[in-house]
Image (cartoon, rainbow, N blue to C red; front, side):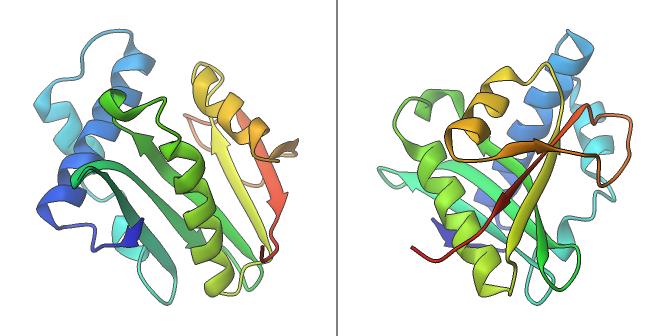
Length: 157
């Protein structure tokens, strides 16, 4: 996992695949290219760069396989966002590696706690977070696609 600018071809393709999957699952139908474009427009991804955040891309066998970001919310809290592993690479252990790398990036930015929000229908993501020590917390933000919130204290390995 390495930091990568969100607009590189690999990062952009991963972001498109991420949004396509979460939107398609939410709407229970395939998202159109126009809907993906609209969802990505103005989504604030530019904040996922130092000093306010980080965006990471993971590769498997040299191929772009995963991405995720962290965004500093305040001096000690970072938000985990856009965590995605392409379906062809799921089950390889990459999601756990991605979470560990994102947590390390948050620590490097000064975070002591990681928080995130997700939807109830994203059961695989929720199981992943629980397996890696995230516990449900009270809502720390509001939005139309937020059903459950998680948090975890961060520490260096």
